[in-house]
Image (cartoon, rainbow, N blue to C red; front, side, top):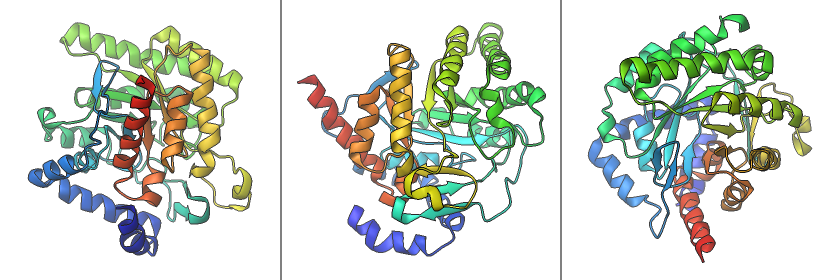
Amino acid sequence: MGFWYDKTIKPYLFRKDPEAAHHLAVRGMHLASSVQPLCRLLARLNRPGGRCRPIELFGLHFPNAVGLAAGFDKDGVCWPAAAALGFGHVEIGTVTAQRQPGNPRPRVFRYPQEEAVINRMGFNNDGAEIVAQRLARQPRRRRTVPLGINIGKSRAVGIDDAAEDYLASFRALADHADYITINVSSPNTPDLRLLQESSHLAGLLGTLCEANLHRTQDQGKTRVPLLIKIAPDLSYRQIDALLETAADLGLDGVIATNTTLDRPGPCATMRESGGLSGRPLRTRATDIVRYIHRHTEGKLPIIGVGGIHDLEAAGEKMDAGASLVQIYTGMIYQGPFFARDVARALAHHQRADWI
């Protein structure tokens, strides 16, 4: 399948503007999502198979360890097809309380030699209420994998009002999410990363944790696991402070990491602004996964993201302490069946651990 993608589909997509190619892929997957028999057929063909060990995490059942990272399906329009391609979970978003167009175009740039992408999308999305209405028309009983919803700050909202803005998104989307990711780490919304600092983070997370508790007590609903997605550009001292806040408030996990503002190695000549993803992020993201795992003595679940461009890189994240991994840029370069291939490789990795 990889050969077929490299020789036919990839050259066609790479001749297009990156964002136009992305929209084409989303439209195709949206069409597939609307045809239930096709989704079921794809799901059967793309099962990891073998003795893949399902993963129980946050009270959820993940059929395999590989998820689709936020950013591909921003508005929740095509995630059922992603599940059928072999992903063990899908994270949609980032969704904001206010509908917004994002940053001016062009805002996505490929670097094939480095298997990297720079984006400065800026949380373009339909807004929490519209996404919630869309998800309400997609029955939960049909889900075959957990659905995460990634929420962020609306651009027009100041830092001091961020907690209420996130809360509006949480209230709109919580009933439709298997877990919610609190995105305070995108580099493409002004001042967003300031929310990772202790002076802001405790109030934001506290507000969301309290709302989560109230919905279970007052409305009798199931508690939604809350995760936080962090930047790879934090110092270890900053990570320590963030983890302390997360532990104090009982967060369920951390996603490490988002895109980076750094330009390591051959990326130093890249002049476009925005977050860098792909192969150049591999080492830094893995180092942060390993650090968090050791710092928390393995007690805080980690989803490892960043630089997973081959099967070895996925296993590296798991060996460093990740319970799950997510991919996105790797799929751009390796094709739509990359998740299935990674999941099968990790299943083999799991079997080796059992022996």
